[in-house]
Length: 78
Image 1 (cartoon, rainbow, N blue to C red):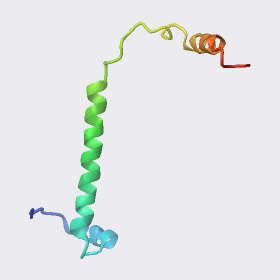
Image 2: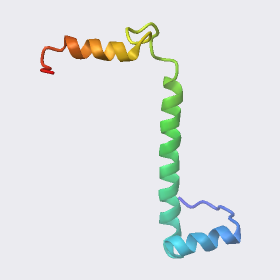
Image 3: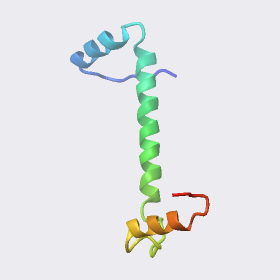
Image 4: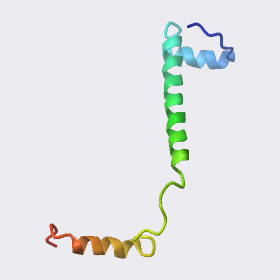
């Protein structure tokens, strides 16, 4: 699909230096893919915020909880 996008001259110059003027479309497509992937990840992160339950065993003293887990693990020798 063709798409018309207006860019400043200095931006096109930088694009040509990085991608070469015969690879503009591929370079721009890759940057858009990366940007959209990042946006999807942020959407997932934001939708997960606040999803964890409260009142965990480790909430009061996380370091004590870790020590208790280590002592209670029969596979550990030390």
